[in-house]
Amino acid sequence: MPAEAPTTLADRIRHVKLSTLTLPLDTPISDAKVLTGRQKPMTEIVFLFAEVSTEHDHHGIGFSYSKRAGGPAQYAHAREIADNLIGEDASDIGKIYAKLLWAGASVGRSGVATQAIAAIDIALYDLKAKRAGLPLAKLLGAYRDSVQTYNTSGGFLHAPIEEVKERATQSLAEGIGGIKIKVGQPDSSIDLARVTAVREHLGDGVPLMVDANQQWDRTTALRFGRVLEQFDLVWIEEPLDAYDAEGHGQLAAALDTPIATGEMLSSVAEHIALIEHRSVDIIQPDAPRIGGITPFLRLAALADQANLQLAPHFAMEIHLHLAATYPREPWVEHFEWLNPLFNERLEIRDGRMWLPDRPGLGFTLSEQAYAWVAIVGRRLPPRLWVEPAGPDPAGPSAVDLGWRSHDSLGLERHARGTGRPLPI
Image (cartoon, rainbow, N blue to C red; front, side, top):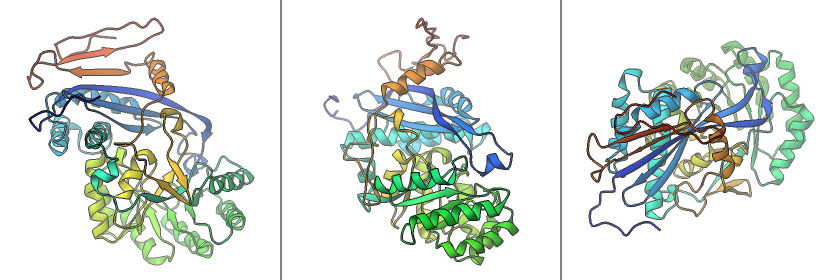
C-alpha cells in the first residue's frame, strides 16, 4: 500500500527503471512499403519501458516503441537523460518534460530524442492518475467512457483475401466496430479487387477504411481515390508521403472521402503543417512517436480548434484514454499484438473499446514481458536504475547509476556514484 499522504504536496522521484524488450510477431508483416521494395517484412517490435517511483511509494509505467530500426537508440538516449529525473516532483510533468528536452537539446526535439522522453512522460501521467485513484482519462477529463474501435491487424497485404475476410468476420464477432485493410500495391487493380471483396463481404453498413502506407504519388492518389469513392469509406489513410502536407491538402479538397494521416510524424510541429495546409479530415498522431502525452494534449487542442476528427495510431493501451478526452467522437485502432506484454485486457463490445476502471493506464507487465527483457539483455544492457544514494533525493550528486546486464548466470556489473557505466 502507498505510504500515508505527506504534509507537503511534493512527491519527489526516487527511482527510475528503464527496460528494453523485443516483442516477436507470430507472422512477418507486410504492407505496401514491403511490396514496393522500400522495407523488409516486419518480424518484431522493440519497446522502451520506463518505470518511475517516488519517495512516497507511488509508481507509474509508460512505454515507447520502434518498428524495425530505432529501438536501441531510444533506450540509449533515455538512459543518458534519466538521471535528470531524480529529486524532481513527479507532479511537475511539464517542468520535467522541458528539462529532459534541454538535456538532449543538441539532438533536437523530434524523432528518437523525444520518443525516448515519451516513455518517461507517459509513466509520469500513469503515476499521477494512480495517485489520484482514477483512470487516466478521468484524470484528464473524459468526454465518454468508450471509443469507437476498428481492427487493422487482420488486413495486411501478406494475408490472402480469404484470410482477410475471415479475420474481419472474427473482429466484428468480438465486438469491434470497423475494419481497415491495406492497399498501395504497385498494381492498383489488385487493390481494387481486395477492397471490392471486403466491402461485399462486410456489406454496406460496416465502417471500412483503407491505408496506402504512403505509397502513392499525387496523380495515383487522386485517380484511385476517385475510384474508391464508390465504397463509402470512413477514410483513405496515408495516400501520400507523410511529409507532403501540400499534396494531402489538394487531395482532401478534391475527394469526398475523408483523408487521414499523421502517424509517421514525430513532433507537434510536423502535425501543425498538416493543420495549416488543411491536409487531413482525420488526424492520426501517435503519442509515443511525438514525445508522449504532454505534446499529444497540445496537438489535440490544436486539432479540435481546426475541427478535425481524431484517430490515434497503434498503442491502444495509451490512446484509448487520450481519445476518450477528445471533444469530437474519435476512433481507436485495435491491434492484439501487444497482448503478450500485459496482464490485463481491454473490454471491447458493441463496436467500442471501453475505458478500464483501473487507476492510471490500467496495465501491468506480464511475466512473459519480463522474460523478453532478460533475453534481450544478452545483446545489450536491458535495464537502467537511477536512484538517490543518500537521504536527500534532490542532491545534485546523489545518484546511483547501475547498468545491469543479465545473462544466463545472472551476472551484474555496476558503476556507483560516478554517473558513468562500467564497460559491458
